[in-house]
Each structure stands twice: as structure tokens, then as C-alpha cells.
Image 1 (cartoon, rainbow, N blue to C red):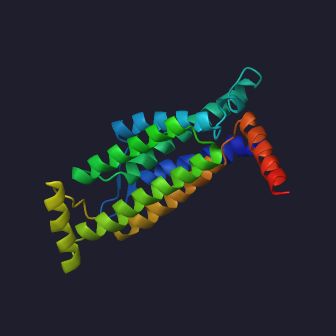
Image 2 (cartoon, rainbow, N blue to C red):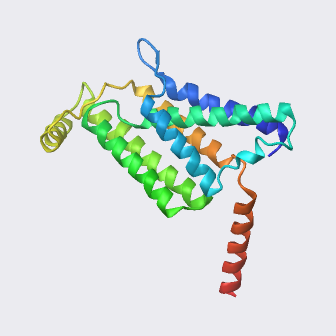
Length: 218
């Protein structure tokens, strides 16, 4: 990672995720900060990134780096934490039974990842699939059910889910631009995760695995 990318590009990318994930467009544009639950889950997510080798904190902060370099690294780590918390708040439904299900599924997947201990590539793929599924649930399925102009099919689904879950599934009607903004935010966040400085041991293990796979094919 170049010093310019570490000092400017990566923090700016992650802070853009924080800003874009907090915006709720509409007649009155509002800013939604991360929830307390997302702040706690974001800590677990960052620990998982470190454990998988997707993030090497020692390459951002350490005794061998100058004070200015350590300050740049601390800024990047804080921006990553804020972006993770904001993205979790973004994809989890706002209230009701869907919010409860979203939190239970998200925490369960993170605990499973800790138990499985995936490497960097598998973890990033798993996070992409998890966030994509949560996006579809909130901004496609629930948005269609909660739309003020919902048709017969949406009303039927709403009644069906409310009967199964014994609670309301409809959410706050979202502005049409909100889904597009959320999609762009998720893409930027995943790009930011892919650009994080990875652990050296992870690169060595990935190289050895590739060499072993090539040798087995031959």
C-alpha cells in the first residue's frame, strides 16, 4: 500500500461510505447515525477481518512507523470502524420483526465465521453475499411491501408475513433514491475491504496454496 493511498485514498473512501450510508433522501434529507447494536457488531467484524488476514493493523500502526504514519494508520482504522458500523445500520431493517430477524441472522453468521475461521478470500466473499442478501431483503422485498402504492400482491404478502410472524413487517416508506444510494454505499465498502493492507502470513499461505494446487493438477 502506497503512503498516498493509505493517507488519503483509503480514509476518504471509508468516510464516503460513512456519509453516504447515513443519508436518508426525501423531502427533508436526514442523517441517521450508527445504532448502538451496529457499533458492537462492527467491533466483532473488525476482529474477524484481523483474524482472517484481511486486515493487518501492524501495517497501519506500529513502533517501526513514524508518528505521522501512525496517525494516518489510526485515521484509516477509525474510518473503517465507522464505515462498518454505518453499513450494518444501513442494511438491517429499521424496526419490527424484520429488524429482529436481521440482527439474529447477522450475529449468527459472524459467530459462524469465527468458528470456521475463513481466510481472506472466503471472508470477503461471505461478507459480499451477506450484505447483498440483506440489501435485497430491506430495499427490494420490504420496500415493495411497505410502498404506499402497493398492489394486491404486496398487500397479500404483507398479510401473509404478518400472520406468520405475529407482527408488522412493513417499514418506513423509502425514497426511490435510497436504494440506489445504499447499493453504491455497499459497493464502496466492499472495495474498501478489498483494499485493506492484508497480513503477510496470509499472502504467504495463499501463495503456497496456489503452488500446491498447481502441482496437484500437473
